[in-house]
Image 1 (cartoon, rainbow, N blue to C red):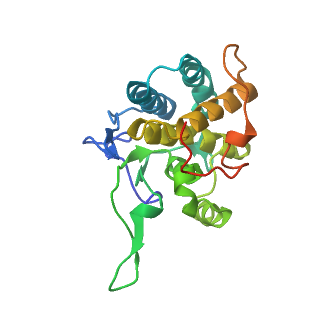
Image 2 (cartoon, rainbow, N blue to C red):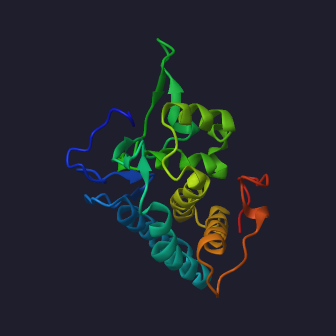
Length: 221
């Protein structure tokens, strides 16, 4: 689907409103991926604040990420020597939305929240603690064999971390008090420390990083 799909407008977005759980995506057509993702991430920051209450440090970090890290990491992506093109993604591809056909045994997916995006956006959810059944390296490696990393390849994991902010905040906004809010903030701190240091936010804590520490999904804050 990622390789064969073609955006009808050659832009990122979708022609009708789609949702991740109960939360709508801002899917207005946009020719620039960094601009589209900045708008998408901003929507999740605002929804999280509305559901969970204000958090000044998170808002400061989010503003810095959207203004500085998003254009830095997403502003000039390419694939096979050409600028990335919009790919149709499922939009909520985690283990509870994947199954097999009872009659044929063929794999099937459902409960999509699709839009045309950078294809790497699809698998950022596998970084989230609630989607760890698709988190093992074997799934990621199998995907990347079919659709190799965009350039610069050395920043693939940082892009994946950046994209996962949307997923973690989406979870937080739908279930206030779960730890994904702190995980999202921690991811912002990591990216800021690495690419654009800023005062007034916390330090990256590897114990709040699901790729480093085994965090139990049931933890609430």
